[in-house]
Every structure is written in C-alpha cells, then in structure tokens.
Image (tube, helix red, strand yellow):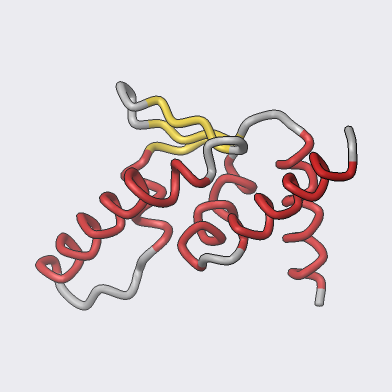
Length: 107
C-alpha cells in the first residue's frame, strides 16, 4: 500500500468517526458484530419522552442512516436491505477503528 492509499484510508476512517450518529452505530456494532436496523436505531437514541416523539426520531434516524451514514460507512459496514441487518466488515479499517475507539474509551 503506498502512502496515498494509506492517507486516503485514514481520511475515510476519520470521516466516519467525525459524526456522532456514526460513532454510536459503531459502538453498537463493535459490541454485537451485527444488528437489525430497528435495534440499531433504538440503541442510537433513547431520549424520546413519548411514543410520538420516539416514532418521529426513529424515522429521522432511519432516513439519515440509510441515505447518509451507511453510504459513508460502506467500506466497513455491510447492510442487508432485504433483512435490514447491519454488520461490520472484516477488514483492516474496522480493526483500526476498533483500536481508536478502545483507546478513546480507556481515557
């Protein structure tokens, strides 16, 4: 791997980690490896006060995940649209992200 490829890989990793929703999804996936989309959305937010607010927030997060966050995370996350299951890929980027997240959690 040349330095430009490595630089691009790190840029991708930091772009993924730069957003709170993506970090929350990563934390869920690092604990469970794979999860149904609905469960991931539940884990990402738990601050809704009532069912109407919860439903509205769930829909918003669902749209954001499917249209914004999952495409950005496509190198590290696999999304089975038919079964609505999100799982981590098995690659070097995931290992690097896991190391970064563990290091931050230790501090």
